[in-house]
Image (cartoon, rainbow, N blue to C red; front, side):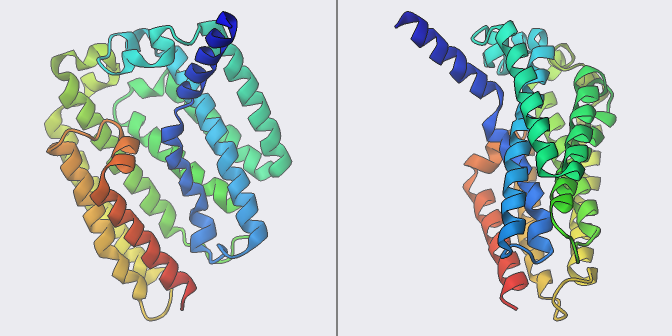
Length: 298
């Protein structure tokens, strides 16, 4: 019984290290399916759903590797010290073994699903490998790499289906939105850790609050502008420009996230804000409902 309880605790710690709460980011894989008018195509939906599951496993492997690499720094962090590897609840040898098995299985299944999807998955992993060992310590580049990860998620969805009318504007919007969220995350971390920020995350020594505020202003404004341009210039939208009706939901969502970052100091974990902030959830739900009505009811 003692060995069983220990095994269950280790298994639970391993699953926690995969950070399932952050798998919400992988929903970007569905962008091609929705915005290319293929949500009602069963085969395309099932392929995208399979890709979503594989990207969840792949991103879980990346988070696991990141926690292995960052374990010493995490032990000095007021929140991250409770992570399974940093706290010792997940033995290091189990973490390494689990990472190797998870990565191997995920890449093998990705190849079976689609060689092009496999190529995107490998690119995503290699990008995050470079991020974990070096690029996350380089100011600005660190957030650009995060944004590239979101773009690769969108691309993963594109290669899984036969795209006909997917607008490249959505790559621009995805990039800018990811930069906005990334810089907001850095600001929240810097505000939380204050003068000890560099001891926990070296890259924070390259940022200041005024500098991050300027970057956030730039990316929030350009995100709204790029999305607005998409709603009346993309070739696959209804000719009556009804998509412009979704702009207020995007504007409110961005402003709400700014409020969470600068007033409530909750931007350090964007996935937590998405899963716990009711106004943000309502805005996202209304935006999604409006998109579905405009794309599939006209």
